[in-house]
Image 1 (cartoon, rainbow, N blue to C red):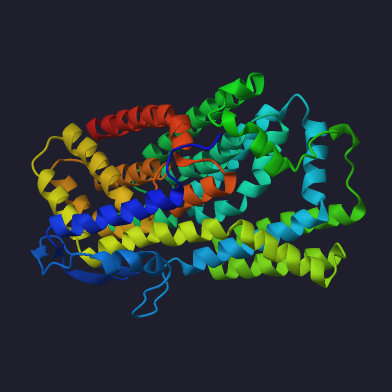
Image 2: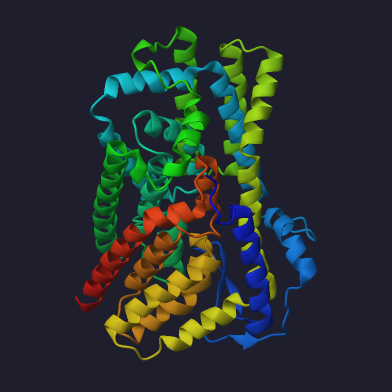
Length: 468
């Protein structure tokens, strides 16, 4: 039975309209900005906020927003077009890999060997994703793993939401507890004019404690679903998901054997992801190079598997078509941020936050700081973007509240990481759910108790740190 909740496309377009309406209500304003060489971007200068001429967004701007999410239609400067193209190349790569039959056979073989111990895949994989999140801010790259991991989880007797949670919550808790993440901690610390190692003990507490909480939560849910599939939050889609992700070939697990060609294909498949992680974490790769890697790997796999030119091309196109909706979601999500920037209301919201924090005692200051960053994260999901926007203005206020600036950085990154577990303006959330065929409302049903637990945990940790 289809859910009556709006699709991701409708939700995002309604948010574009909502932000456009805000540009008619919230006064336009700007801070002066100067280049910060350490951050590598222009940052706001405290005390320079001024009201500017309004630029309310109208009907034409709303219609242009999805396109502007991909690239600026006036200057042709890229926005999210690189992420969208990466998703399409990824889909093509997965289409070619699926044509070899290696993934389906490999899943059945893995389930045969893991029988009775499948539950331990959850904490192990979540830990690996958390390491990616805390070290280099793993986010968009996770989109490559959904189509791989969800069939594995479903073959193990769990549901699609379990697969989503391992990836999205695993990497998300890593970003929430960022230790050396250059896109959150390092940029925010530089913008706050402190060493990024300040406060690292508190961030390790958030990382380890948060990972234990999240792994236990997902494992408990997965065991409940395996015992009784009707308790899955997507129980009504159970059969549809199994047809889609297991291709009706999940029976006969004991007879699954990989041939030599499939083994080589899987080795190339695994090596592709290893190279991707290496490139992103140490070579400065981004979407274009990752897309080129998946495109090249698809060709190599097609040749090794002797698919032939026609089947290789058609498999690539069919796979790209499967993720076209995800690519469109990416542009819509970025269009919301573009709308806010064009309406020049972000600095006004930041200025209001600056005024509300003045003269507060330590506990009130750090907790209000956390909630301000929570609110701003819905409109600026990018950790680096929010760091550059808010830290130069908000971090110096800590000096007057007798709170370390490092704790302000920690409050920022934990708030941003928490919100980006559900943020509809964050393409990673909506994109991952679209690949998994899990509706946004079903994801909220699954995750809201975990969000409540994490919020309490974060508040306790930052409050204790403020008093010590």
